[in-house]
Amino acid sequence: MKLIDYVKLFLVICLVAFPIASGAEEKAEEPLSYAVPETQFTFQSVVEGTEIVHDFVIQNKGADILSILNVKTG
Image (cartoon, rainbow, N blue to C red; front, top):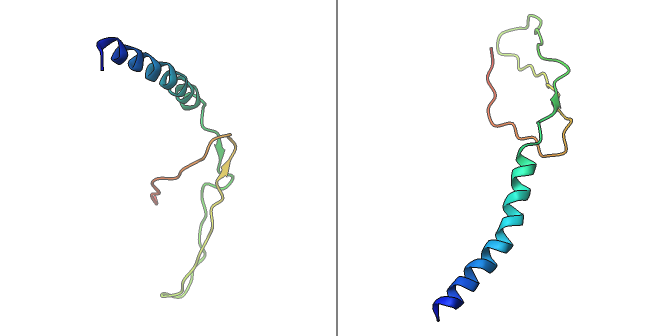
């Protein structure tokens, strides 16, 4: 392959890849939007060994996927 062919191939790759990369940058700049209506819950007294459960609702208010990667208890 001649040098000019490599240059043409490089330019084609750049022209194809640039719009994809610029679109990814715009999407990454969108602010995350979520709501947690209930941030605390106090359990009542129970007999030791009893399994109790409480669900916290997290609402995705944005247009993108909301990923919860780490949860810690206080």
